[in-house]
Image (cartoon, rainbow, N blue to C red; front, side):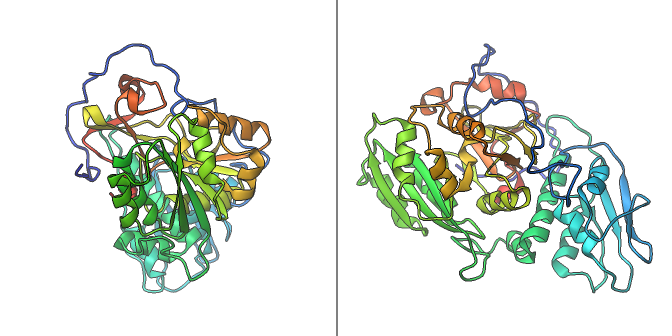
Length: 426
């Protein structure tokens, strides 16, 4: 299917018609979850150094100035520390952004990079030559704009994409932003120095050979990590022509296990996960879309949050029968929670082993795993969902049981065609 980029401005399209019916929504494990738990002992929006925790997706606040007053940086007239605290950044969250007023001569820039690490949207149309070039390019790449709202507005989305790029630049280094901007550094382990990349064991179960080529390609192009794929063929023989083609084209190492079709989905996943040799285990769904920084962003969130389990918000859904993309924002990102998108679960391998792996269930595996882990004291953090799109087609092809009409009802935005965030780099 040809991939179309997200609109760069508001597109005056008619809303997607609710053609999937209007019956009451059923509860599905991957789309609905418990209420937020709020900050835990591992993190708070008001204490400690600033992180992206507490980022506001949309705000109608003004754009303030970040100015060097000769001794320190001040935002909106209030001085900031060299390493902005969580409390200082929390005060800035309602702002649409900060316009950086660089002095002509070099000054300490720790405050600026600290704000970038916390995801505060920063802008500078021009920067003096002494400013790190990658940061200067990022600051000039986004301009705060008034958000007109509406189901097809992308203003708030562009603001959040910019926030994520700033976080990557500040927390992962300039190479992360450079690789993304240039579209380079793709492939397993790209973007990290030799021997420096963490190893992630990607666990995937599939009974749909026609999706394997896309899934394996997306895993192999992950940046900043070393990946291995643990593939459970669920009722599909390894000799299937589509399987052989997908494996031959994959640039990442793949371990294949064959599991009978009548084996529960959770058992199929665990059969593959037993082969994990990485530092981390990540679950992957074969029919969804993932950006090239998906795993690196999860590891970054794990680092700044200290969480045991990290995952993304389930925001973007491609409704295949309607050829429409919807975005739901009722599940906030950058928050402590007991619910993340099931296809994005990541945790340390030893922690995965301690939990006993995925429950031996035919469906509801992700929700049951998270519930058991949370009950056992695991701290779960949900980061942004801009690099992930869930595919929703007909019910028979999924373990979930929600009608397409449900996604239209809960959508904050909707667009014709496949319209992911630009961070997906589709």
